[in-house]
Image (cartoon, rainbow, N blue to C red; front, side):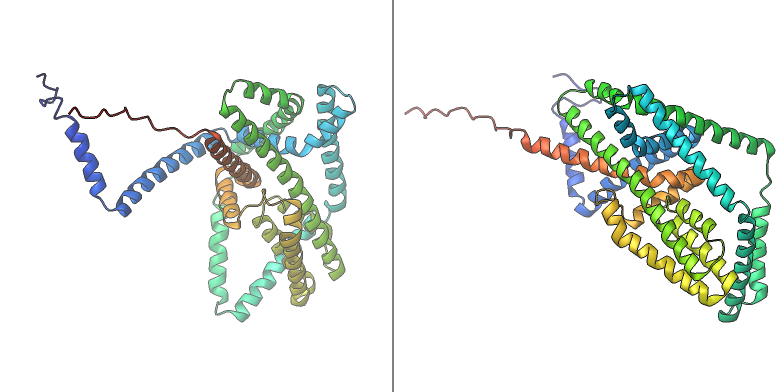
Length: 386
């Protein structure tokens, strides 16, 4: 008999695995489940941490790619309409990008001419609104002026202690300009060759994986397009609704506040809350508490109509996310990449959720369509000899 390397015979070696299995099965099911789930959470957390670290190292590239995908999904119907007019792929993509630049440039010049002189007034109105808010807090709550001044001075000191580095500022400006230029170049090539690149990728897959990837890509692209177009429409409706309410209430600086509301609409929940708070502060500084309360009621009414009526109709059910998921995604995006990360976090989360759900459904469909495995036939038993 040949002995194993640890000194035991081959017949004794399997007993070790059997003993470990018996010890594992002897543990309560709750302990076994906790061990398995803890191990899975550790692996997932390590993967997310590694992904976040890599994203932070290539933040400008990641933001440029995310912005490119967002704009491509938004402008894809325009590019398809130009292609239906018998335009080749390259001119159609170029005209789409030029149309985007023309709209952005025209809107930017128009908004700047209308609001450039009002932003300084907006800062003054915000300062007066904060001062009135401070008076209301000290008069209605058990907080003294000294305590509130100490808290504000500590916050102001924390902000002013951060020295501005000219080299770092120049680097940031260069990264922003480079990311914007890279996004435009990537947008042109994605509109021009995006579908051919996707078909080339699918051609390298075989079997059921190709069908799963095809459906997942279709669902993800449809989700991103619906989210981008729906978010822009809802942000415009919010800006128009709140702007009209401010005009009817006689609140000054209605156009800059509507612009802030439109920009804030691209950051769900948090952006709308900040924009509404700015409008209420300006109304408080300009016309007093009564107008501020009416402005707050108008902001809440517009947001409730948007959240309960417009969003289900425009965004569709498959694009909507739970508010907890939105808050976590926006916070994580802001921590990783600042304001730009907060803008792109929610569409990334929506697309990732829809792709994962589509892959799971496709795998279940493939498993249900595959024939069940037949058990092996037992050999016929012979009758015992007499």
